[in-house]
Length: 121
Image (cartoon, rainbow, N blue to C red; front, top):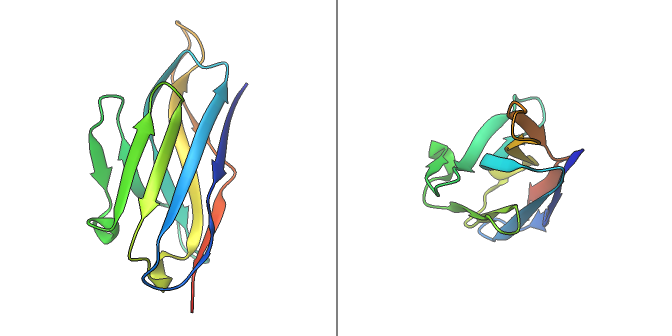
């Protein structure tokens, strides 16, 4: 079993900052890319940012320059530092990770339960 648990969501005023964290645990043999998606009410889930095992990052255009994704390989964690938040960033944010649970086991995508981020005055 693999679990991804997010933390750090909440209510913040426009222009403020939040830091999301996600920890993967369980039967983990190898973790590849980790990252964050978000889903706003009535919209499809969209990629926010991801980071490879080697540290290469990719960001959606709407967060470039405002959000930073990072990971700690030793702790199996991925964080998302979000700055200059605006109401359009309001969404449920989901952590994901590409994980192999054994040497011969195919890599699968695992997801966290989601954490609500609300940007409002």
